[in-house]
Every structure is written in structure tokens, then in C-alpha cells.
Image (spheres, rainbow, N blue to C red):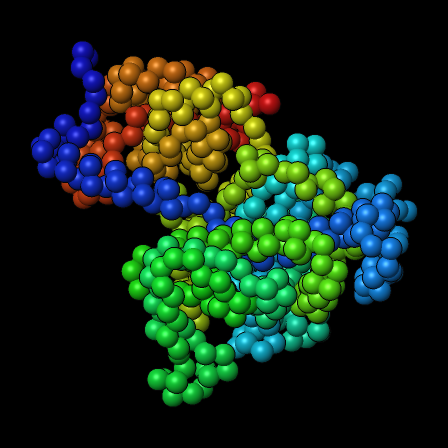
Length: 502
């Protein structure tokens, strides 16, 4: 074979080029939008630990005033134990990983106020100072003892109905069971507390990217009112806006805005804006040097936050991770996208739910357990420079093998275009089909080294037939650089990669 392989030659070049260009743009746009929505309640955790650290430091150094305002703060009696807790170990320290579950709920004054519509696992690795945030969708179904499969956001509410203040531990146990990891701590806050904290800060300044109109923002307490009285019109002009707690919360929670602001991705970006603005306000001298404001903030946090973290544990977490850099933060989301680990379905009652794509939680567990696995920087640089893309097909009957390999290869910088099963599933040895005909040799070398796969520059007839059929059905018009068909040898180390990543 003496020419570059091009799958689009299977049908007319003009027609397929049009599909390729259009869908490539869509793919790139979707990939860019698929950044994780960082849980916007997480700042409350850093708020508490930051205050504890700040108060302890300044009390010891007597760097503020000689008055005893610190002694009058409601948590000062707990802070006294901090000096004696230096030798105490956090849960998870012994295994090198601390897992904290962040939960956001509407609160008792909201309809379904104990449903945890925001769920995020935060894993801290003390040895590397890395943090991983894994977002868990509220519609993901999990097994609940003596009840059956229910949406995960209902676990907290079901527990609270039986015993007050038991929801945090109940959902922690549920997440621990499905992910097969211990959940060391939980932090649970409500929307009311978030709004009050923003008010204590004196509001936040937010730049509104687009003129904002949502005619269906629900009015609290009007769920049973006539239809026209259940909603209000939320409007914001483009530009800088000073938002109080109520407005900031509405801006963060709105789901039905017109235009580009009506998507979940836009909602996530708005939440991140408010998170950053709140963190900047908390860290300002106007806040830190104002004892009245600090006391008010701590009181609000105490009244609207439930956690099993002790004060000394908060302080230790703060001291360990307060200087974390952006490049040390890993963000992941469990979703139902083309390469996601969840799939859409309906429960026995006909309700929409999400279930693990592979039939069990093993793929998700693999993601969680390997989220901190590092790869050689040199290899990642090579792949990123060539912008190499891969399609991964499972050529075996081993469930979830392609997903696990895709998670590992993604860390090298490969753009994983598709993950699925091969029509031929009798492969013993993995094979890389190079559709660039050697044009991306650095990436090919990395891929071959990490998978130990054979390399082929030609497509077998069965694969050509599959590609032609998929192209005709407009399933996969985007051409990858490499097609990796996995054999049973890829299961040797669960992921199909050599254990040489460290």
C-alpha cells in the first residue's frame, strides 16, 4: 500500500468531507464544553478551614488588636484543641488518600429540600498535593437496602425521613458501596446557607457574559399555585453586576434561560463564576481584617452546614492543601455522553434514571481508583504536539475493557473519539490500525509502547465493511488517526497498559 489510508474514501469525497468538517467542529465544541462543573458549594469548606487557620495564626501572633474579640467567637473553644492535635492523623492518611463527599441540597424550606441535587466526591492525595473532583449526577440509580434501586439524590431524603441528621452518613455509605472506596468525611450545605453567606460578604461582583432572561424561574413555595404564579422572570443585563445572595443563587441555579445560557454547560460556567467571586471576596483584606464579618460568616456556616469533620481535621486539610495549584486539580464527571460511563434508561416506575453502561460499577470504580495515576510528561508532550486521536474497539468478550483502556490513554493526551465493541471479538492480540500511514509516528510509538499492540497500515476487509456501514448510517463520520482493536492480552493488567506509568 503506497498511499495514506482515508476512511472517507469509502464513499464520495465531497459528501463525506462535508460531514467530516461539520461534525469535527461539533466534536471539538462538545469536548471544550465538557469541562467539569466544579461544585460551587465547595468554597464553604475552604471558607471554614481558611477561617480556622487564619484565626489560629493571628491569635498566636497577636497581630491584630489586643482586644479579645477572637475569644468571643462561637467556635473558639474548639480551636483551642488545634495546638494539641498536630500529631493526629486524618482518616485516609494511612492509605494515602482522603475522600470527602460534598452535598448540596435545597433545605427544609424548599420542595424536596433534602434531595441532594449536587453530589461531588473530592479525593485528596497528600503525597502529591493533588485533588480530584468527580461529579456524580443526581439521576444515577443506586441500590438501597430494603428498598431497591433509587436515584442517588433520594438517599439523603429517605434517611432524613427516618432519622434527622442521618442523611450525610447514609449517602456516604451508598457512595462508598458503589465506588468500593471508603468515604472518610462528608460536608452537606443548603441553598439558603449559600445565599446568606454571599450576603454576609456584602454581595459578589459577577460579569454577565450574555443578556440573561429566564421566564420560568420557580418561585419558592408556589409549587401548588396556578401555573402563571409559579414562576418569575429573571433578567440580567450583560456586563458587571453586583449580586446579593438571592440573585447570585438564582443566577447559579437557573435552568431555562434563553439562548446559550439555557444549557447545563452554561449553568456550570455561571456557578464557577460565583465560586471564584466568593473566594476572592473571602480572601480579601476587607473580609479577613473585619472581625464582625468573620464572626457573621462563621455563624452562617455553623447554622447551614452539616459535617462529620472536626475543627482540627479541617485545619489539617487546610494546611496540607491550601497552596494547591490549578495544574494539581483533576476534574471528572460521570455522564451519559458518547464515551461516558452511564447510559439513559427508565426505572420500574417509568422515571428517567442513569445506570452504569457496562451493567455494573466496575468501570466507574476503575476511573476512581486510577484517577491519580500519572504518565511520563515526555510521552504526553509528544501526543499533544501531534494532536493524535483514537477510536477504541473491544475485540474480546471482556466487559468494560475498552472503557478502561480509554481512561488510561486519555491521560497521555490522546483524543478518544469513540469507545465501543468490535464486530469481531475473537482477538487474542491487540492491533493498532494506523490511518495516518506513519504521519504521527511519535504518537504511534507511545501507543504501541503502552499497549504492546501490533501495528497494521492496512484495514482488513471486515473492518472496511463495518466502517462503510457506519458511514452510510452517519454513525461515525469523524475519522480518527488510529483504530485500536483490543485483544485478550490487553486484560493482563486490567487496563491493557504496561505498568510503567510512574
